[in-house]
Image 1 (cartoon, rainbow, N blue to C red):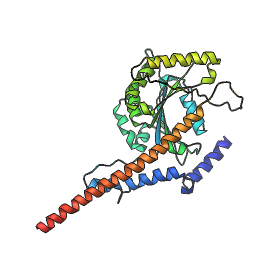
Image 2: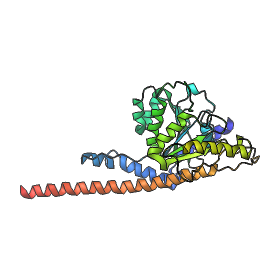
Image 3: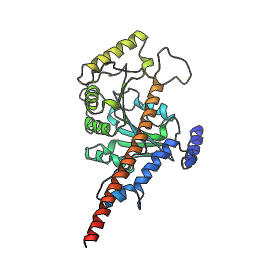
Image 4: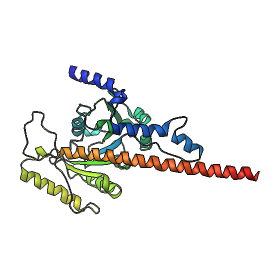
Length: 317
């Protein structure tokens, strides 16, 4: 506890200091500010010209889905290097948790979450979801966490499990908002849960380029032969689904490295996950800069048109 207190204090101090921001953070932050400035922001200028602009987000959204106990929360804790997410939570009480970085460690409820993230506001329209939304803000500066919001979702199970809200509808909606969708298949649990496969198929129709499939907890899947068998089973089930039968289906094996440093025989491709996050951040920066350029050109064109119309009207008068 003492240790985390120290880290927390240090994180809080540096978070407000702009020198601690990476170049990528600065770019995204400054682009965002160019849009939202109340007086001369692009959103305000565009509004006066009858144009609606959306401010770009300052972080990428990574949605994690998978069967109950597939290791989604454990992965987030590993990435953030802080115990932010409770692991092994009972299915009945599971909801959606947004894990993001900020200046101080705090937990927010559903209403505060939607207030903080305006672009998630439409979730309110799905009955019952707000009571199952939380946000965990951490001061961690690990990996690329300052540029990522993880969205942890309820564990998916089959059978007559009644969720207190429409879990499928919520996940599909969040999929539209995500920059990356990580699907974790657990080799020991309900990896081939029908609900997971149906959701994956639906998400894949729209977002195939954002989807990544992983065999999580791979070090617990027994010997190499057992692991290969499980992997083959999952891939076969996925490939039976139209749209998912891509050639060269890729499913890296990942697991949380053992803190004691005891090596496992199983190949761990968890670093690939981090690289994917990094790649998506870089792509998002490029997209944000392109959008900024497009929006500025659009505004300039409209201003020119208005000036021309105005000057024509003047000479006519």
